[in-house]
Amino acid sequence: MSELWSLFLRAAFVENMPLTFFLGLCTFIALSRKTGSALGLGIAMVAVMGVTVPLNHMIYKAVLAPGAWAWAGLPQTDLSYLKLIAFIGVIAATVQLLEMVLDRFFPAIYASFGVFLPLLTVQCAILGGSLFMVDRSYDLAESAVFGLGAGFGFAVAVVMLSAIRARLSYADLPQGLRGLGITFILAGMMSLGFSAFAQMVAS
Amino acid sequence: MSATPSLRSILIAPLIRQNPVTLQILGLCSALAVTTSMQTALTMCAALTAVLVMSAGLISVIRRHIPDTIRLIVQIVIVASLVIVIDQILQAYLFEISQKLSVFVSLITTNCLVLGRTESFSRHNPPLRSMVDALGNGLGYSLVLTVIGAIRELFGAGSLLGWQVLPTVEQGGWFTPLNLMLMAPSAFFLLGGLVWAIRSVLPEQVEELEYHSPDDPEASA
Image 1 (cartoon, each protein chain N blue to C red):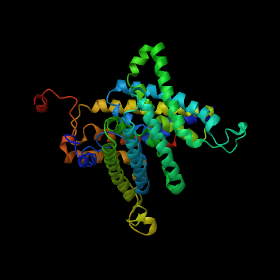
Image 2: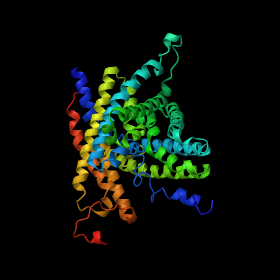
Image 3: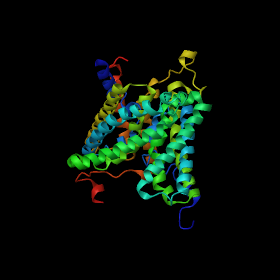
C-alpha cells in the first residue's frame, strides 16, 4: 500500500508531466489563461488518465504484448508495434464515452468541462502516460495509481500556473515578454520549484 | 494558383514570421524534451518533418473522400501509421538515439503541430501546396529546436554535436559545465528568452494587453 502511495506522489510531483517531461505543454500553456478553465481541464485530465492508463494496460497485456497469443498457439507473435494505434483508439473512445455519460447523467459537470474534453484525445500527456506504463512495465494496480497521480500532478500545475498568470495580468511587462514569453519563464520557475520535490520519494 | 500566396512564401513564412513553436504554440511538448543535445534534437527534427510532409501529402490527396464527421480519426490513424514506420526505422538504424528519444518519437502522433497543419491547411489545399507548407513548418520547428539544442549542449556539456568545443575542468580545461542547462527549467527559460528576442525584432507579434489601467494612454488610443 505504501508503495502505491509513493508511486502516486512520484507521478504527481517528482515526475510532473508538464514541468519535468514537457508533456501536454500545448494545452498547459494555451488553457491556463483563466483559473476556471484551468480547473476544468485539470479535473478532466484526472478522469481521463485514471481511466485510460489501466484500460490500455489490460489491452496491452491481453492482445499486444509479446507472447500474448501463446494460448492460441502463436507464442512468437509480437504485436507491440501496434500499441500506438491501439492506445490512440482507446483514448479517443474513452473521451467520447466519458463525454456522452457526463452529458446524460451529470449535465452540470459536462457544461463546466466545455470544449476541453474532445481536445484531450490529442493530449500528449495522456498518450505519454500509457506509453510510460508500457516502458516501465507497471502492473494493473500500479498503472491505475500512476494514471491518477499523473493527472493530479497536471491539474495542480495548471491551476497554479493560471493563478500566477492572473496575478501578472496587471503587471507592466516589457512588450516582447507579454503573453507567451512570460508564461514560459513562469513555467521554468515552477519547474525549478518542482525539482525540489525530487528527493521527496526514495526511488 | 493565382490570387493565393506563392509556394515560396508558403515555404518561407513559417520559418520565423509564422513560426509554429514561438507564435502558433504548436508542437511544444517534444520541442523542449529532446533538446538536451543537438544530436537528439536533429534526429527529432528529421523525424517530425518527415511525418509532417508525408501526412500532409496523404491527407491532401484524399481530402475530398474523408467524411467530415470522422476526419479527426482518419487523420490520427494516418499520422500514427507513419509514426510507427519512422519509429521502426529509427530503432533499426539509429538504436542508441532512439533509446534516448524514448517515447517522444511515438508522441509525434499527438504533436499538435502535425494535426494542426493537416486540420487547418492540408484539408483545403492540393497536395503540392500542403507538402510545401508542411515542409516550411517542419523547418521552422527544426530551427527553434536546433537553436535551443545548441545552446543547451554548448553550455551544459561544453560540446556541439559531440565535439568538445569548450574544454571542461575534468579534462584539464577551464570550462565548468552548467548542469542546470541540462535540466528541465532551463529549456523553459531559453524558449521564453527566444520568444522575447523574436518579438523585439518583429514587434507585430507582440500580444495585446488584456487589461488597461484607466490612466493608460494606450487604452484611449
